[in-house]
Amino acid sequence: MYDHLVFFKFNDSLTPVREKELIEELKAFKEIIPGIVELTVGINVTEEKEKVQGYTLGLRVTFKDKDALDKYGPNTAHQNFVKSLEEIIEDIIVVDYPLS
Image (cartoon, rainbow, N blue to C red; front, side, top):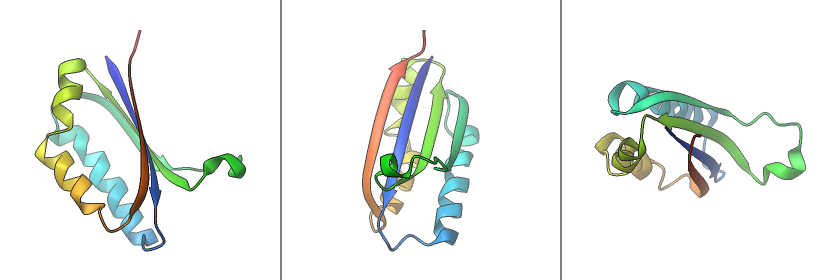
């Protein structure tokens, strides 16, 4: 299995309503993208505010294997989501690693 971690930093144009919509869109991936074993997404609530650096939303997706992870990026649902971020995203951190 592989974990895919994503941390989102949005610009000031992101509204609380849009942020909730993004969370629901990401949650739907589990049902529409093959190979996802588990998916969690949420708003960063860390008390270590000096370490947040503006990253306010986190996503963790566990894929059944490397092939599923590789097919996730070009998946239409994923690509449409990424495209929807163009006006509101400032930065993204992505980390992928195999689970042992």
